[in-house]
Length: 162
Image (tube, rainbow, N blue to C red; front, side):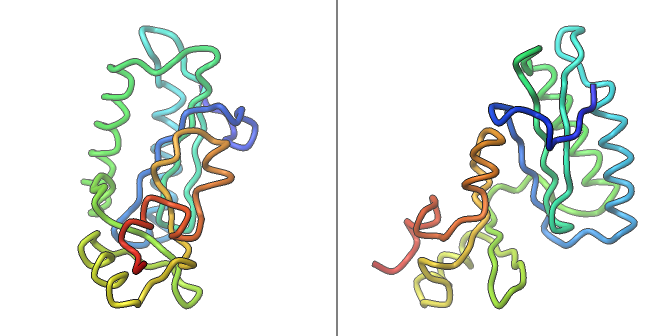
């Protein structure tokens, strides 16, 4: 059951998929169509799941699930991952590699492998106030408050110069 992400409760579970490249407008249109179809039919043990999504900055796919009516099961999460795998194959992007960092620099969004980000932090090219995307948030409340945060306030801080 598809709902606008903006009306889902802050306790809704969140999954964030970041792309290794910026989506084109055609890709965003395809993502919107395919995610709408997927979420309208998404179930857990036969129960409809109340979920929403948004594409942010032409780079992130955010899926939120209101678990107060029905929680995600292992099978429903597996179906979501299979859906994302097929989407990334169709679009020719990588959405599942969690060993990458996305951050703002010079008013632009950048995407780097974790090893490159670590080297940049060591060299001082990114610092404690660099805004990073904390894709480890688990619910909409955390997403709204702690997704775009200074590196010093996220798990990225472990790589910063002391």
